[in-house]
Image (cartoon, rainbow, N blue to C red):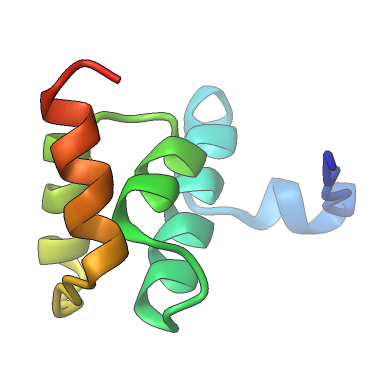
Length: 84
């Protein structure tokens, strides 16, 4: 499944970030929000944001979002550390 999000031009122009940063910032904000609500694991949220887990940890910390560490995330981290 692939989801395409259409953002109206009027909203895109209203973002208070440089145009070249807009897509990345929206991806990070969406990923952080979905992670905070428990709709994505940490690893999948960092993948959606298009940044490393370390960089996404900074995004989460800047927004004062508490880390939830589930068994699934432990399994993902273990697989990631093993190069899988």
